[in-house]
Amino acid sequence: MAERKVAVVAIGGNSLIKDKQHQTVEDQYLAAKETTYHIADMIEAGWDVAIGHGNGPQVGFILRRSEIAHKVEGMHEIPLDVCGADSQGAIGYALQQTLQTELYKRGIHKPIATVITQVMVDKNDPAFANPSKPIGGFMDEAEAKTREADMGWSVVEDAGRGWRRVVASPLPKEVVELKSVKTLISNGVVVITVGGGGIPVIDMGEREFRGVAAVIDKDFASGLLANLIDADLFLISTAVEKVALNYGKPNQKWLDHMTLSEAKGYLQEGIHFAKGSMAPKIQAIVWFLEAGGKQAIITNPENIGKALRGETGTWIVP
Image (cartoon, rainbow, N blue to C red; front, side, top):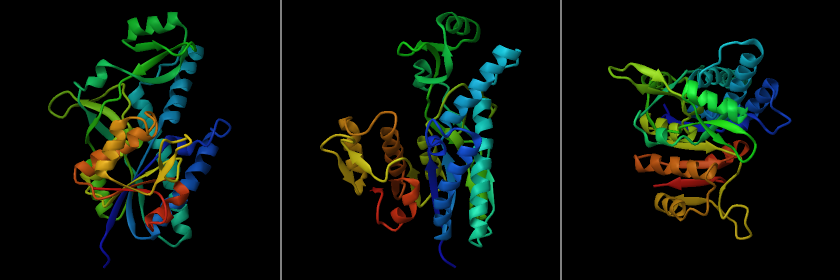
């Protein structure tokens, strides 16, 4: 029997939403279908796969609906951690249904499961002292200040567009459902997990977990998962075929290959990778390799098959 190869594939929440014109649930389903087609290629090539995904836009929609329903009908608002759980379920549903359909077409009868996943963060993480991730809709100053006083929100004025709530982005420390995820993978199940970076929880003591209003970077959580399950590969699927130095500038240079020390050097220079997009992906891979990870790839969904054959993508190795 061939040796089993395990990969963690992290896909962006934005890969489910092509653009402003394609945001409906149906649009997201069709986008999921495109992505899972390429993941099916991996599975057909013999990989066991755990899929992590982003959820930024989707959580934004859930929050927005909640805010409108509260204003119009006086309905209770949904806490951020519960929005995260809702999005894990809905995105998992789209991914598992489209992937199941594609695998069946190919005669591959592999079970797929979504695990609603909590990820523990440190309640003393410095990020909590400096919340910076904007979430939810815009408010006027009066509403922002009222919510700050009554609900303990952190609010900031956002570039003249109004006021917004900001939350912390702490680092993931532990995948609470790790044992379940490992059991499923070792039994050949494709697992969709750490959705949106996981539902952030803190340990109140004696393993009593409580959800917190925070956002965990999904690439950091997927990289942690890859280390914890001893994955053979950590693959980040994003909007570009390869990583570039000086992206978008006249001296842009595409990279086929990077070592861990090169990746750390480029990160330290601080000029190559955009803070909100490529930098966290490179950082996630650096941490994965430093903790003993074997290899990582960054590419776009349609090039996953080619990248695995070494024909494209950016490979990052120890």
